[in-house]
Length: 338
Image 1 (cartoon, one colour):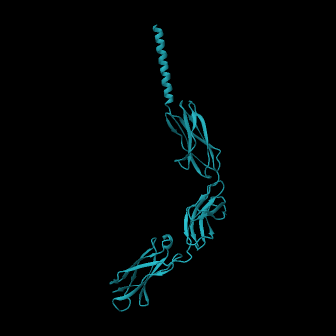
Image 2 (image 1 turned 45 degrees about the vertical axis):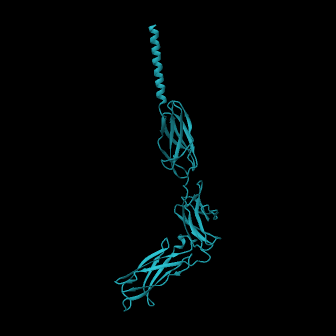
Image 3 (image 1 turned 120 degrees about the vertical axis):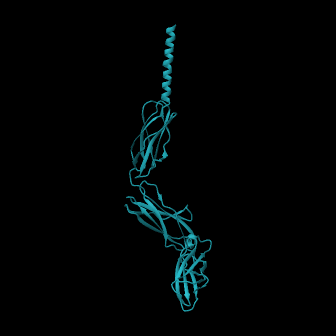
């Protein structure tokens, strides 16, 4: 009887050891090793690695991207619940030619998640063209020339301009091509049949080989009105009397256009400020319009004109106009130098 009881105790102890061992295996997170990359093309690559689930049901996925933040992740798949390392792989697609990518393998089970080491590779082919939308030039009432800069990155590159009255564009120019090379190339195309007095959006779009179209930034221009409106102009010169040499005056003011002209277009150009003693000009300043259509600047007279003290001067302020506004004079002012 004692012998039988001892045997039962021994069996129970062995069973307890087995249970504890099984729990220890189940409590281990998977072992992961990011593997090599194969079958690399312009736009895809096969990513590999190995996983040991360590006895617990395990899932895995790959991450990849242009840096170690990754950003793209494959679907999750089961790696089983074995205790040996197994090879796994996935195909990364929709990649950019001629571009370095980082990737790693990630596996998780009930005990935790294990991150594989970061690996990197470069897709084949030439990278996409670099583009920059330039300014519009030779803007008229019904036409404009749009410009851009393209770096073709060693491959002949097709390009066109998109344009329209919003960032939805809606129209595009006939495609053209720049030859293969490494130096930036300036391109231009003329848009015809545009509506006058209208703001247009445009951008460059370029592509080559297996690359996706590369759009440039959105840029705007406004066609000229059929008839330029006359702005209002206000100006004030201070002080009314300058008593000491040098005789310094400050002229400030603003130009106001109709509200349908955005300030990006009507606030262009210069204002001239002339100081006259009789008919003789004794002082002059050229003041640019600021982004809010205001202007301000100083004029200095080294000496008093004439022999009369104080000497009366007439100040004439004139906006020179631009493609959207006609020239306009402010009301004359009178100041004196002592």
